[in-house]
Length: 106
Image 1 (cartoon, rainbow, N blue to C red):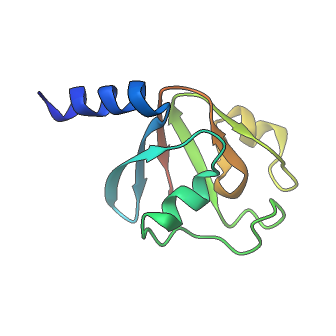
Image 2 (image 1 turned 90 degrees about the vertical axis):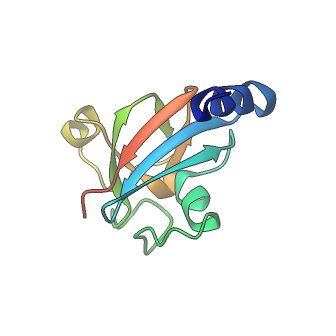
């Protein structure tokens, strides 16, 4: 069984999203449980993602959704055009599709 097949099987068994995140020049593949914010998934995996307020006010955790669907619970700092361009706040973002690719440009 290939690594991809294992990931897909894990998604079907757990309901988790397969998350591919590029940050600080490294790519990580993680399971992202429904209802868990992106920032919490990264921090729990030992990834030192940027953040300050955890409440959508500072935009320190801004990242872009390159593929897949996500949903922001709250947005107090991004303007409409940034959201339309695929930017999101890791501290407020939940998964909405089976696979999501996220990139932190900082």
